[in-house]
Amino acid sequence: MSSFTRVSRSAAKIARSRAEELRRRLIALGALDNSLKPFEEDGFVFFPLKELEGVRGIVEELGGELTRATFEVRERKPRTLREALSRRLPGHLLDKLPSSYDIIGNLILVDLCEELRDYAREIGEALLRIHPRAKVVLAKGETTGDYRIRHVEIIAGSGDTETIHREHGCVYKLDLRKAFFSPRLSGERLRVARQVLPGESVLDMFAGVGPFSILIARIQPSARVVAIEINPDAYRYLLENMKLNNVEDRVTPMLGDARKILENVREEFDRIIMDLPYRSLEFLDVGLRACRRGGIIHLYAVSGSLEDLSRLVENRAAELGHMVEVEAGREVMEVAPRRSIFALDLRKASQPLYGFKNRLSPGGLGWGLR
Ligand SMILES: C[S@@+](CC[C@H](N)C(=O)[O-])C[C@H]1O[C@@H](n2cnc3c(N)ncnc32)[C@H](O)[C@@H]1O
Image (cartoon, rainbow, N blue to C red; front, top):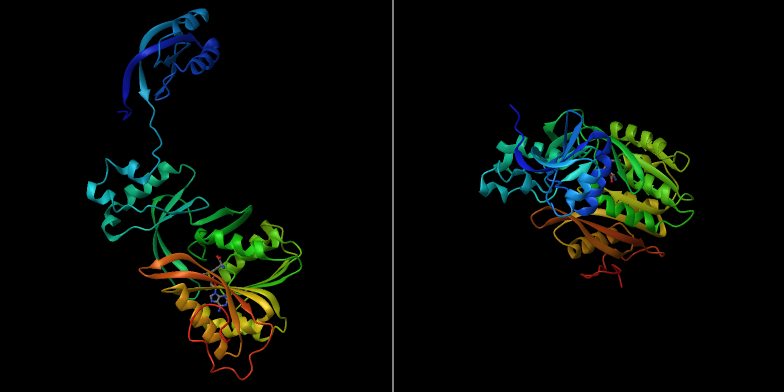
């Protein structure tokens, strides 16, 4: 039995050969009812009408006739999750539906609270109706380990978790079950890449599948980028993505621990990206050493506030014998109540900091030592 809804409506009946012409004229007149599906029967096409004024003349001119017919109601694509689930979920749960979700290639990644877990399948299927090009919906679990892999569970659709994501004109192949990727940083990637000057040397210390390195290489072709990644799967995608985006000549990939690799690299970089928010401060000594005087470090770290983080970083840099200025800072995303990932643009001072280690500024942004 069909589950489609059908309704009886005034109709224009026309021979198939004149149907397209009539369709165009009905649209121009605003007489076609788009909420219903036209159909064909015995060589005639039936158009549903919402307006009869002026229609008879056109239909008769084309050799058709006005009649009544039963039409199938078009299923309208829902626009929001709430709209898609309004009749399938208990009312009190509709308010708990997530207001946003991530689309990564043809995957949808959604965060479901405990109360919605029993409805995961319905929610996943609703998301597939809203986004017909998506093939799999994944419920977000925790992101764990050094490789920052997110645990995910397929709640709707079929297929694997490898996909191709497009961002700022670049393409990234990735498997969310094997490598870290978040489209929520796309604005940050563009912000940083736009700052890179011609001829700069850039170090991407925690490169993942390459979205910072590759975008920089595309936007600023004369820049040279070194991209370090410890997860062999993410590194494999980094190599593939460099090829896909034609930047193999501008990005030097390195597999391994950034600390160990940089012990043997003598080069000093103009710009360093430290995108490992949960542990980046542990690597501050490495980043500062690899940064030339007057160079920039884009540091991502988790904190309760921008001020706390700025002070902490300035003080820690001073303990390490370096002076840094926080040139800019912004909240990137909330990760827990009162905990966010912040982005700091740190300028390493052009003068070394010798013998000043204990004269730290008690607070405020700007130079750690004044
Ligand atoms: C938060 S992700 C960021 C990836 C990338 N910047 C992006 O925007 O998608 C951090 C990445 O650093 C890698 N990583 C973790 N510890 C590392 C280390 N000691 N050396 C190099 N890479 C590391 C992880 O495997 C992960 O891919």
